[in-house]
Length: 149
Image (tube, rainbow, N blue to C red; front, side, top):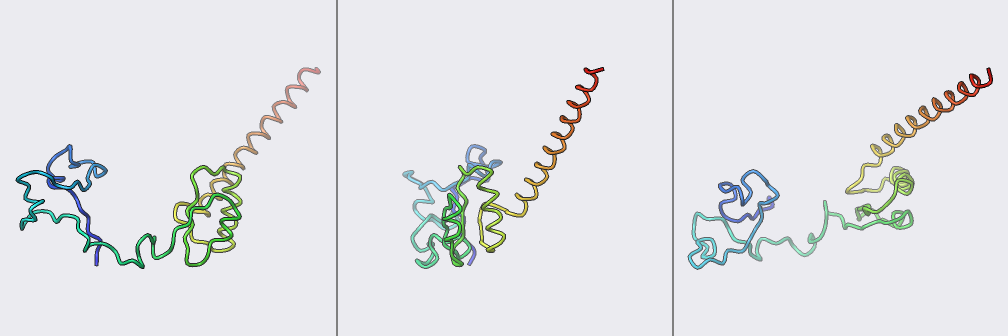
């Protein structure tokens, strides 16, 4: 069954409730005295209720896998086949490069990180830096030769 999206009434009609901005669209419990949604009248949006919840076995899972937040390489190596890794936001580039290599070697599933793309981007960046460095060194050598003459 498709997951139901619970929204407050008139989200598609009013700008302040999220007509153009989907981020503003959310559920708010109706508390009004004459509210038709609170009274669960036919033809109005369905209110949130217990019966729409997931079964206990599936609660908290992402794509059927248990999420694990990873902060370093050791934690990444401990991730099992029935778990999905989420890389913490405060990790630097050096650690991320190590992690990306381990992810590709061990075929670990990661939710918020594409190891191949990341490594390709890092390689491009390092090659650009190396070219720039070589150009600077050549300019320095040429400058020294001109000063001697």
